[in-house]
Image (cartoon, rainbow, N blue to C red; front, top):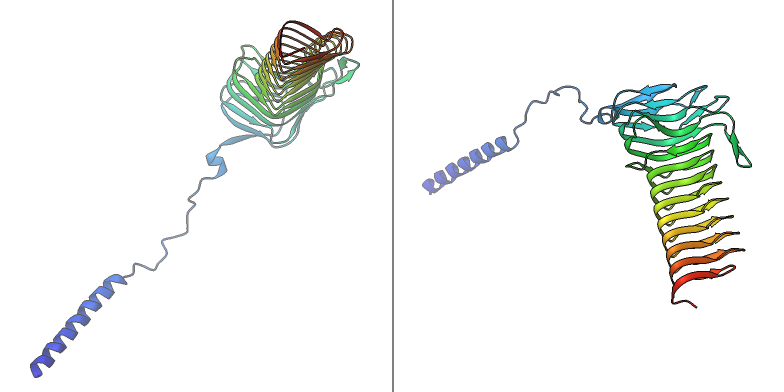
Length: 325
């Protein structure tokens, strides 16, 4: 009996020792003294995207990087901002670049010297040019966004509104330049020119509204030139006083109107509508599922027409008809 008691005591002591050792290991604590003040673990916006502010004009961008306006800018002569290098992003930041030059001249944003990889974003360029029965004149800029010297490449203009310029609104080479979500109004020559124009509008343009290789969801209005002219036009509209309303190699789901010329002129017109007061409503090599209307001219003129309708005098001038009366 005593032996059993002794063994029991030793087993109890042994179990308590193991428990104490385990507990002391499990609940061991390090130093409770703080290591020091916390340090930032995230980068600032300036570190993520270093940017240079522009608060006065004229201003020349001579080094690659990101630039942004901090206020509205006004010049009394010449160009406001000149981009003279590659790899530049210019964000107007919702502000306006304006000119008070008495006789319109200079450019709001000038691309000088064949630059590449340029983005111009989010803002307004304004001048004081007005339209008086097709005659444009007044103060301000000659051009909104323009280029000089060698052609720039890989240029993107997005969210820019241009108004009141004597010559061009947004004029870029058609090589690799894109204009998106822009508005141009009251310019004396061409409203928007680029390789691709999308979701944009150019109105009250002395010559032509929009000229592009490819145009999507856009509207152009010109006095003497075409309202909109593109190799490929999708979901577009064009209006002209004396020129072609909308002209395209391939026009899809488009509308064109002209007072005295072709409302819509295309190599191939599909699901399109063209109208003219005295000219031809639609003139195309191949017209499909389209409607042409003219008050005193031909409604629809085509070499091949499939499932089309024309109203005018005469209604149709079609060589080969399919699914038509």
